[in-house]
Image (cartoon, rainbow, N blue to C red):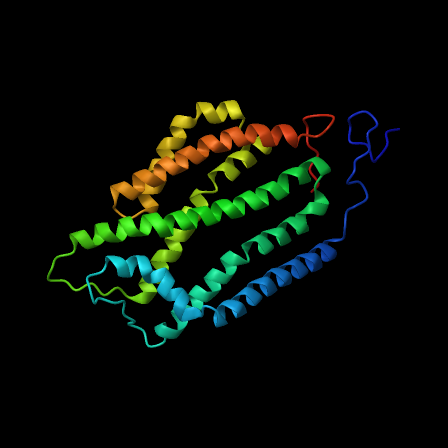
Length: 268
């Protein structure tokens, strides 16, 4: 009679055997993790509310656009409550980004008990690297793309038109661009996960390189404004990150395989 704690590889016991928890207990832990993440965001937001303040955060976010506008031009608010609501939204956006490592750690802490030891070796590096890559994507968008895009747009504006963008429209534009570039920089993480879960192999990723470039070109054309320079730059960055992901996948998968076999037993 076989041992119920066996993994199927000889007599080696399953290290997760007996660790299952009731569904209600999982929900309670999930609630606690969410509360901790919200508290972290709230604490950062409270600090930012006093220094540098919501107004200063908005001025910082609007700086690339202001720099490209004609001298003396400013942004306008077409909604009565926009001067109050928009800076508050930016405050919480900044707080979420700063607290993102804590939020991702809570996610990791929630799923960690259901992972094997060789799988846990993969999670924390991915949490740290995904956070840094998202920040790099946002920084790339803010410091490079915005300047190029706004100058391109203003170069087409007739002299008879006075540029006065609405602050809510600008906020929506910025949030969309930050999300697009932040996710674009997560390509290496996506590649690693695809290989680690067995969806694709490293060899297949190299074979499908041409298809990826076509998909990436279409995606960058959709998420970026009609500026060929910024679109090409994003495409080159995403393509480079795809190659980095292939190289990183080889290292990560090799170091996080089960000690005795290549077959993973996933706890449901």
